[in-house]
Image 1 (cartoon, rainbow, N blue to C red):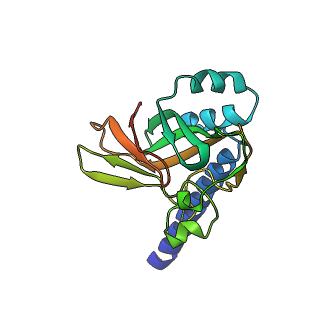
Image 2 (cartoon, rainbow, N blue to C red; image 1 turned 90 degrees about the horizontal axis):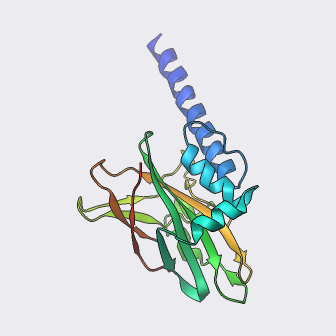
Length: 193
């Protein structure tokens, strides 16, 4: 009987993980976003790709941080939100600030095989807690897919793309962290929530 309960529990955990991974994937594509557990991540991501671009543009005029990358790429951080589920969601816009088309550098995905095999993403991003002296890597689902915007490719001159990244939450007393992304300058950001 205990083997049967264990098997049923594993199936439940796998199903839950797949549902969460699917929900985050849909949210990262600009769809969905009505998940009650992640209102902050969904709301910010869907604003940039949907019906209210003026609100997102208004927020992006005063970003929390701007990270400059190679070839005119600019990552503007619009929110860093701690969720009660034990993670931190970073929302922003990846913009080609130049006039020519730019291919998103593959280094942004990081160098971990599990992440890289799922395509171009922001999987190489980390949050550093300077007080606690800890580094937090992008979360992954059970199949190794990073919980970030994926499917990045070429950005035309002036094009902007809403992006997100999810990390394990630092301790509640940590309110400021450093965001790092390969090929970009680092920036200090405050966690809200």
